[in-house]
Length: 493
Image 1 (cartoon, rainbow, N blue to C red):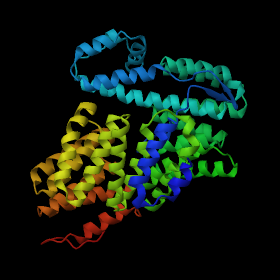
Image 2 (spheres, rainbow, N blue to C red):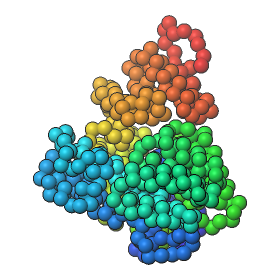
Image 3 (cartoon, helix red, strand yellow):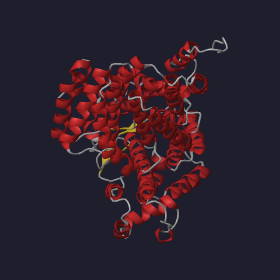
């Protein structure tokens, strides 16, 4: 099946039928999937083999324990409050190593007196980072590492299997001090340090070593991962530059790395969506999906193909093409249920996105049906504080606002704002989005002064994070100038 050609030719109104057919066909014939993060990045996990300098070997570089630990965590999230379950799994050697890596202490020294949902959620967050790091190590090995660091890479992969990330930093420190490499080998060492620091949330160190790596080598893989970090920490302009350079380098070298090209295009689409360039985002996301048939052999996970489609639906939603977005969300949900391979959290997120469309269309009965499924899913999986919980609360606030239940709407907007402030700070674009939503609620209640204050605050955040030409910045300026009430000062912004 030539999925590239088929995806490129699909018209928006054909997504419901076409994507269902494509997805079911791919699941049934190939077992491929690629992993994309909806906010900034995705990478591809290959099968259990490695390619070093173009030669395939039978060495398994993956931490096979991750799959078992993921099952433990998913089960733990479904059994919140069941201390007996933890007592049963804590004897597993791999689980012990994982716990000790996360908390940097022996498992018997853990204080588990706090909420068990928070405990399992913390583990799930770390698991995602560790899986992503394993994928990035694989990306490096698949591309081919410098022969001078072959022994180092072998030791790194062994340490990765035991979750000994601090040992990996020490190993790279020792090799860096020797400084006996070819420049390209040293660049690989810097890149390894950067992705490892990023996995353990030491972003300043990660950025420092990404800069060292890209200063020594114009490797597209380095630039893509550096751009991921920049996007994560809010440096969108520089992130876009790095993505553009990475894609250009692939083109200049005529390198048929469709796998990496698909990754970069998907990341650029997410960034373009964030920056408000919706047409560019759609084009990039569809181009990313067009590489589907070229990467069939690289992955055995399904979550990311659905995530890529979810991101495309988000773009249609941002463009106001609600019918197309709705069709795509319904298709994703249908296929995930049909295949019975769905990630529960992703499934809940797609449902919540569909609910937002129903809110915009005024189909409130459908919204309540979706929320009745999602309330339990989100709180069970994520606890009380998570970015997706904030999104869910924002959507519930929008529903109550449409139903003229202003008191409940304000309550849920404030809950969402509190979570975002704690997780991302009060100067994040997501915080500004919810502030502007709350401002509209205040305007409905003729609370003009409060609404103005909220819009001014959101406007300052938009200007700070995405600049004066972003659609949301322009919308906030226009909204602020449109507000009229007695005794209002005649100021323009």
